[in-house]
Each structure stands twice: as C-alpha cells, then as structure tokens.
Picture 1 (cartoon, rainbow, N blue to C red):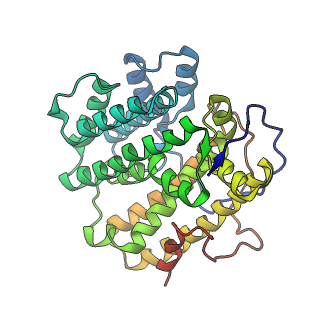
Picture 2 (cartoon, helix red, strand yellow):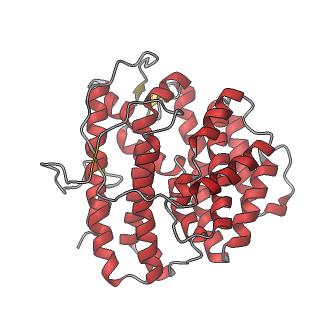
Length: 349
C-alpha cells in the first residue's frame, strides 16, 4: 500500500487499445420519457446543492443505464429505477465531500437500516426522505425474495463505502488484489444487477442465482461496470481529490508505470474479463431457466450500455475510448493474476 501521486494535472492521454464489447448497446424506445420523469422528481427534491453539479447530473441521462439494460421492465418500474440511479450519483458525490470517516459510517449505517426496515424511525440521516421514497417504490414492486436479495447487495455497498473512504482520508492507494474486491462493493454495481430482477418482474430461482457459476458471471459483469467507470472517471477523480480509489491508479502504483501504461493494462483487464463473461454466459444459457436467460441478457446489455453512456457525458469529460466488437488479436482466456478474482475462471467447464 503506497501513497497516491499528484494527478491534478493529468497529461493528454495517448491512443488506447479498444475496449472489447461484442454486445451491441440497446436503446429503450421510451428512454427519454423515463429520464424526464426521473429528472422531474430530482428537481422536486432538495438534492445536490451545487447548481453546476446538479445540472451536469441532470444532463447525464443516467436513468438510461436502467432503461437500456432492462427492455422488459414496465415504465413505472423503470422510472423508479431511474430515480434510484440519480439519487445514487448524488449520494456518491456527497460522500466524496465528507471530511470525516465517522460521518460516512453513520450515514451508511443509517441508510442501510432504513432500507432493511423503513419504519425504523431513524432521524438525521442524509437524504432519508428521498431514499425512503425510492426504496418504498422498489419494495412495492419487488417480491419478498427480490427485495431481500437487493437489500443484501446494498449491505455490501454500505459496508464498502467506509472502507473505500479510509484510503481517501489517508491518501493511500490499495493494492490491486484488494481494490478489485473493494470496488465490487463500493461501485454498487452488484446492487444494480440484482435490481434488474425487480425492474423486469422476474425472479431467478435460488437454485440458479446461488450457483457458483452464476455468482461468478454476476461478479464479472458488476466488475466490468465498475471498471468502465474507473476508466472514464480518472480525470474527475483527480480533480475531486479521490484518485486513490481508481483501477488505473492502483495498477500504476503496483506496476510502477505511467498513467497511460496503467490505463492500457486496465483495458486489457477489462477485455479478458469481458471474454470470460461471454464464455460463462454461453455456458449457462443452454440449460438456464427463462428468468436466468433474461437476467444474463440484461447483464450483457448493462455492460454495453455503460460503455456507451460513459463515452458521451460531461460528468467525466474524458476522451472516448475506441470500442470493438471483434475479439482483439492475442486476447487470451487465462485467469488474471489477481488471487481474489481468479476463482471466476474456475467456473468454466
């Protein structure tokens, strides 16, 4: 674990290898309508005090990450998901502005309790009214099993946020093996993928969703979503003083290489993991139930949608990466040399 270098003045990024994404992005025909409803709700709330930050977020269309990954979801459910997405970005920015770890721990524990038991009566929890409104909608739509799964994944998120913040407050960067596990929770991407069951009014049988191969493909997809954000938020993280928790920074520190070299290695990590996602998806699909097949398809759409979305919004303002649907030459299928995730590849038959 080493101290983080000063990235306040990032050099111009040199051409990067292409991101391998063989799944075409899906565009929901009513995405604009869904986003307008979510934005209207956002404007009605006392959220995001900085007007410039608020406007950038409203212009981002982040609700499309929900609608474009869940084509079978009802409009009402997707609108609730869009609100949740906007609230999540506001909460993420708020956490990064906190000055003490105690404040972050209290906020995360309070919201987790509110998610588990909305009637718990906690007060002085940031964003509590908005949070309870969104969770109330999702809980109304969800089956008890779906909401329990969703709450369990949110617990991992709220537990990971103070862990992530501890590095920020000490100005240190986690080692790569630690970071990929930390990011799996702190990115909230496992929550996002689990919520797709609620959006789509479908429930994958426990015998399938709890199978190690399905758990692996879920983690691969969730990591790809988080790593996409890292690749595009590198400049934003440097500006905000949060660059300790970024995949590229971790690689740079561990390998003692330049930012450009670290970013290229992060893309290779993404590409090898994307290949694994496709292999596991294709292995599971033939014998999967209809809900599992739908879930796997939505995971793929979520990845493709995130890659497309990050490339075109002002929140990150990082040069768009090239994307290819063709398997890059020389891309191997061996496990990444990262012990905490090497088990993903062991699920291949």
